[in-house]
Image 1 (cartoon, one colour):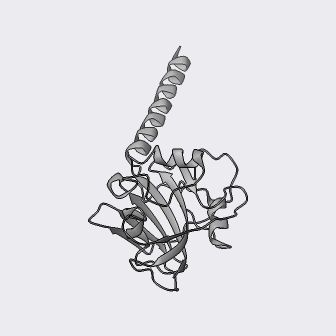
Image 2 (cartoon, one colour; image 1 turned 45 degrees about the vertical axis):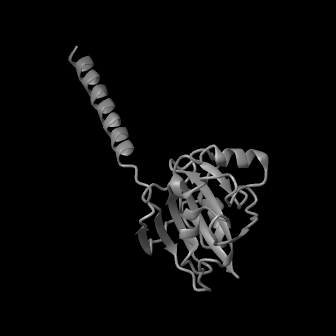
Image 3 (cartoon, one colour; image 1 turned 90 degrees about the vertical axis):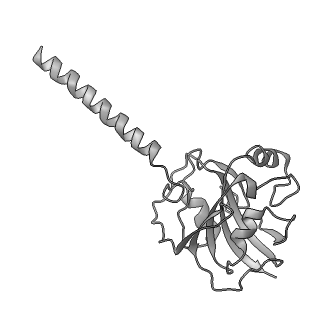
Length: 200
């Protein structure tokens, strides 16, 4: 009887530990600390130097364990956009009104994939080219790109008020399925990971 009682209490104790652990995880989720980006995808995204952003829970393929680089700086703008400078480029700087070419991955705030210009399996990319002008690109992403240098990488949390406030704003996929998927999440914060390729 004593052995059973001991085992029972041990089971309860372990269950409590699991419950506490889960509670801790749920209540301490932080946009800038949770590692949810698929590392294999973004290693293709930026070449031979992999960068860890967010590991996508919906992808089951095994990935190499890589170390996330130190964040250069973190910015919180008055608009509510939060930006991490992951890597500073050394090329031309983007200014408002410039035509820019960039790759991006868009995710929900919980880390789930929405859309990307980089194919998750082949690594092939189809960068977008957009002017940094009002009514051409979502305002939050314009704020992220302005001030970036070519070769640089930023991660940002964009609130709905700075996102897809109408369906004519870019970047948005041309294909019906991805377009519908993106617009279905336009009323929630979105995470963009951006690599600036060119400024014209």
